[in-house]
Image (cartoon, rainbow, N blue to C red):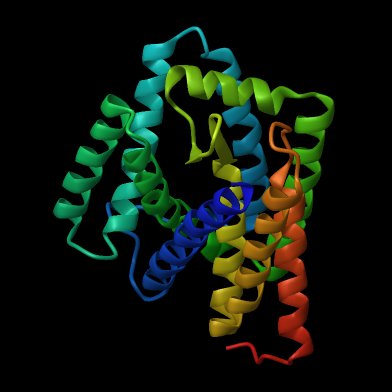
Length: 258
C-alpha cells in the first residue's frame, strides 16, 4: 500500500513540476499578464525569505479570524492560478476559470479538485520569481529552506501547528494523497521550491532540467516508501539532495548552458 501511495504522490509532484515548467518556459518570451512584474533581481532572495517568515506569522496570528484568512487565501490562489492559465488562454478567460476553480476549491472541499488546483497554481507563482534568481542564489535558497524545514519539523514543531491551522480553516497549500488511514500530505513549499530551482535550471540549461527533475522525484519516492507511515518528515532536505545531485550530474555530463 505504501508503494502505491508513494507512486501516486510522486505522480502529482511530477505533474506540478512539469506543468509549472511549461508555464515558466512560456513566460521566458512573454510578459507577465495583468501588469505584473517579476520580483526585482537585487532583492529576490531576501524578498522570498522575508515572505516565508511573514506567511508563517500571518497564519499563526490570523488563526482565530477564519473568514479573513480564507479570503486572503482565496485571493492568493486566484491570482497565481490566473497567471498560470494565461499560458493557455487569454487574460479574461484565464481569470474567469481561475476564479471559478478557486471558488469551487474553497466551497466544495473535494480532494481531486484541491489537488488539481495545486497542479495549476505553482507555475504562476514561480513565474513571478524565477527570472530574478541566479543559479547560485537559488541553490542558497534550497539550502536555507532545507535547514528551516528540519528546524520547524523536528525542533520548534511550528510547521505541524501551521499545517493544522491550514487544515482546520481549509486553507492548506499542498497536496493530499489518500492512503489506508487518512492522507499522505506534501506541503506547498515542497512543490514550489523545487519548481523554482528547476525553472532556473531550465532557463540556463534547457532540457538538462530532466536530471534534477528525475532525481528529486526519486528522492521523494524513497522518502515516502522507506519512512514511517505516521511520522512527519521534512521533505525539503530530501528533495534538495535529489535536485542538487541531478544538477551535479548535469555538470558531469557537461550539458552545455544555453
